[in-house]
Image (cartoon, rainbow, N blue to C red; front, side, top):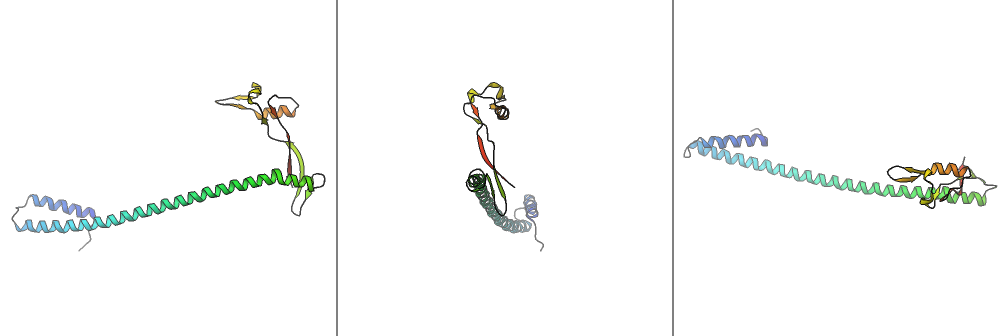
Length: 177
């Protein structure tokens, strides 16, 4: 006997129920239809159990995938944190430690190793805004939010202009070649 799909079994069930309506309730044909209906119900029940097990298995797989996604997101967060820490360490080396070593141990601001040559030089640092309210309006960009035009301030400070509320100290940097 050929295995039927759930759709075919439901179709057979509907057909048998329809035949039952047009059959005399005391006839042999009615007993046959009732027995076929019972067999079809049992087959549908077995199919539904199989579908149920399959659905439970699908839910298990989905939970496993969700758990894996959560684990990977945790790993991504951990790696991003490590990256920030590594960038912070690199920034400390480049802005503080290496300039200090070159200044203290180097000859006239130059220090050489087997792999690199470090030269200490001064350059303009970031523009520091001390009092935002004291900055003249010509340096302010008017958009949705008021901001300071640090590029213009840097240029004018380099030219020797005095701008109240802003300064640009010299900082030490190292060039590696």
